[in-house]
Length: 593
Image (cartoon, rainbow, N blue to C red; front, side, top):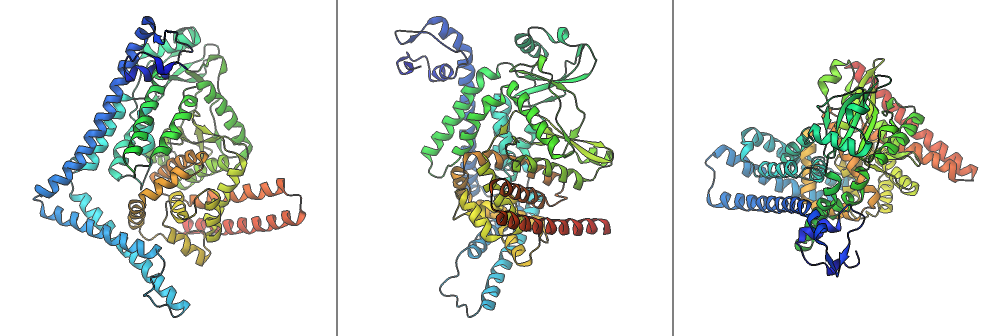
């Protein structure tokens, strides 16, 4: 490897394929690859080159689409007067919302005379009312325009479809990245979210022949030799693998066999390198392009996801911690004697996607109970010391079933886990406890401990998916929940902040501790599930409750002062009583309705 710089150039893609080859050694003669080694790289090099070309051509096409949209709008105006009217109205109202948000978040101008605290409150309240009015007006315009706009002609939708096609054609890593983008609500346009969300359900499948070959290569026998029966059609497929149903020879027990897509292990490193190269190159070319954090997170974790033995260990460790938590959640048991780095054998557990509303109703379950269970399981993982954290909870990995009239969660796909140190865990817990209690000083301090000082209000809004002024309102009332008048206007308000502060958001992501980035991804996935369920419960309260408990237990373990322990207990009891009162009010409100 030290002589890599002296290799005779085969091609750029050839060097990439060589550099990321899964082979342990490739001999060099006088600084040049031997002919047979070069021959073995021809196919992967061509395939990698093709995927890179698709990536470059897709990005170029998207840039041209947006440029052309701007030119055509200027020189070829549309004839649909009503649509033009609402497009112009939307642009005007976007500017008004931006101006109102800037005024609300900026210091009081010198020319504004504040005679008393009452006058200051009235002034701030007036600014807040202007933000809400502007957000409601923008939401109205967007709703009207959506009803008029032909989605097939939307530039955003066209660009999203190009990305979707790229993900499908290149597969593997590209689908993984596309799924991640589909969770970035409020940061990228909704057309991207809608189009790319199909990647959760339409991942490519490998042929049965390839599945048999992978199992033969790794376990030494074909499926029909290892199992009593093996279904050829997969019941699920994802970006990295697909799942088949099989039955154990001795017991006839139903099993789930997860088989990695053939060739993915050999090509994934080159694909990651290509993506990182493009992202880093864009960062150098364009000052405001700050997506390096995304590349930094994909690279180190993909090899772990491709090692199914590592996934099996994660599953067993997660099962242990979940059992100790007492929550109604199970993890399928691993059958180790039929596992390898590319094949994972586990007991089959029934369940349906957490976002399948029809299945939830058919099972006689309440969406509120489902949402509460999901939030509780992941909050327990995040705030339990030394617990591994499942950071890929998209709907296909979070299954639900009915047991004794209540939801039971089946947690699958344990490839992407994050282990965080407990000092960071406690900093994160302080932030969530402060968010729940609307402790403004606590939020500011906790964000600063995570490296975010000036834009702490934006980080709080990103985590909660709620406008920060709502937290300010709760700080005045002491309530754990706010009156949500219009979710559309709130969404428009957050989207407005996201548009205006997009560069700040990207800079926040780039400056946060690296161990927090996957937690944000997990938070995005959970928010997507909660929104799909209609946000039936206050997940902020659930998360904050687990955070408060973690901080209390940490004080008991780390402090030797009985006074400090007593103060921690009294504070925690106050939080518990406040949460219990909130839950009682919510229960009574639901019962009354």
